[in-house]
Image (cartoon, rainbow, N blue to C red; front, side):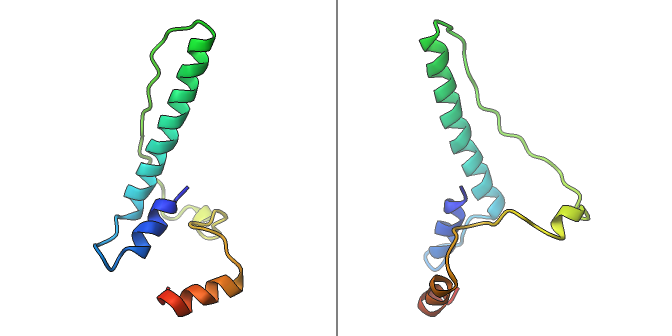
Amino acid sequence: MLQIAMQEYAARHLEPPAPLSVCVAMSQGYIGYDLQNALREELIDRGIHKAVSTVLTQVRVDPADPAFQRPTKPIGSFMTKEEADEKVAEKGI
């Protein structure tokens, strides 16, 4: 989902990368857009003609939340140690 963030990081030598919060908002927008269209199509198929909207929201979180001590959701793509070593050697990341 955060492929955008990875692309931004990879292109950092061309221009400054977008902040992670912007990449997350873009992902939310893409997901909302796809869900909105799928829901609209399903409603039309059922003879229901109602408007469907996407609303992006922001949430304030407590930086002391214990969930931040042991994160469980990775950001970026998965790779083996060998693939990671190649990336480090190739791109210095």
